[in-house]
Image 1 (tube, rainbow, N blue to C red):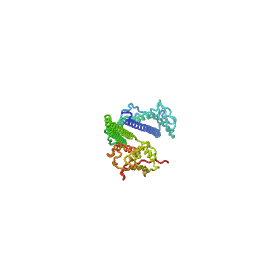
Image 2 (image 1 turned 90 degrees about the vertical axis):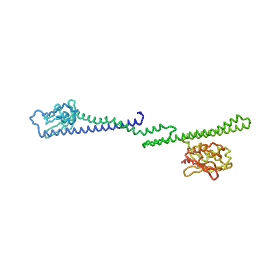
Image 3 (image 1 turned 90 degrees about the horizontal axis):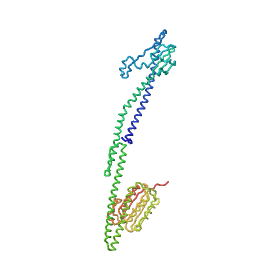
Image 4 (image 1 turned 45 degrees about the vertical axis):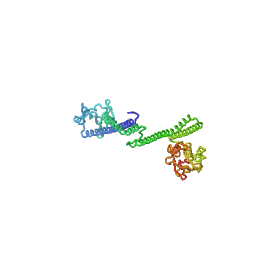
Length: 465
C-alpha cells in the first residue's frame, strides 16, 4: 500500500483514533477503579476496627493477662495464582490474610494484635487514616478510639495489595485493546477497501478511455463521487467536441484548399506552355487572384483555430456608435460606394466585450450586407436596447435572398448561386463564434425587401455609479 494514498491515511487515522479512544477510556476506567478500590479498602479497615472494638466491649480481656493476645495468621504456601476462584475457596484461608493486620491498646497496654503486627511501630493515636512503614513495607492504617474504655483500635493493610489489584485491573483494561487491535484493524481495512471500491472503478474507467472511445461514464457511485463523475463526463464532452472540431477543421481546410491549389497548378501549367502575351497575362492574373483567395482562406482558417482555443475574451465597455463607424471605415471603398448606408444609432448604447473581436464581427456582417446587396441598394443599421439589458444591432439589406437562413453561420456554407461572389463561407462562422464567446446571439431572417435581416444581441455594459 502506497504511503501517499487515501486508503493508507484513512487506515492510519482510524486506527490511531481508535487506539487513542480505547486507551483514554482504559486510563479513566483504571483510575476510577483504583479510587473505588481505595474506598472499599478504607471502608473495610474502618469496619474491621469497629467490629474488633465491639468484640472487646462484649468480651473484655482479663486485666490479669500480662501478655497481649496474639491472633495467628495462616501461612498459605500455595498462592493460588493458577487456581480458579472456586478452587481457592476450598483452601483453609486466603493468601491476602497476611496483608491485613490489627492492634488493640487499652490505656498504654497492648492487649490484642494479629501475628503480622508484632513488629509494628507504635501507631499514631489520632483518629483517621495514616500511613506507616514497617520493614520497608508501606501500610495504610485506620485509628479508632473508644473513650468509654480508653480503647484504641488500629487496623492496617499493606499498600502493595492495592497496587497488585490495580495492576490486575490495568491488565484487564489493556488486554482487550491489545487483542482487539489486529482484528479491528483488519476489519477497518476491509471496510475502507470496500468503501473505496467505487473510486477504484471510476479510476479504471477513466484510465481505459481512448480518443476513439470518449463516451460518458455511467457507474452507480455514492453521492460523494457523483459530482466527480459528472465533472469527468463534462470534460469528456468538451474533449469529444474539441476533437470533432479539430477533425472538421482539418477536413474542411483540406477540402477548401484543394480547389484553389488545383486552379493555381492548372494556371501555372498554362503559363509554362503559353506563348501568346495575352495568355500569359491571363494566367498571371488568374494565379494572382487565386493566391489572394487562398491567402484570405488561410487567414480565416487561422482565425477560427484561434477562436476555438479562446476561452474568455478581454472585455471592456465599448460605445456601439464608435464600434460601427470604425468597422465601416475598414470596408473596401468599392463596397462603401456600392450601396446607400442608413445609420440610426443610439449614441448612449454601450456593449461589454473585446473591441478587436467585435470589430471583426461588425466588419464581416457589414461586408456581407453590402456584398450581397444589389448596386444602389440600401443597408440600414439600427441600434437600441431591450428589456433584458441587451444591446440590439439590426442590419437590414435589400436584394435577392438565396441562402437558407437556418444554415447561415455554418462553416463553408455558401448558396450555389453565390459562388461567383468572393468569399470562402467562413466569415459568418467566425462572427457566430465571437458572439457566443460574448454570451450574445445572432439570428437571420428574410425581410419583405427580398433581403436579409441580421439581429445581433450583446450584453449591455454595466452602468457606472
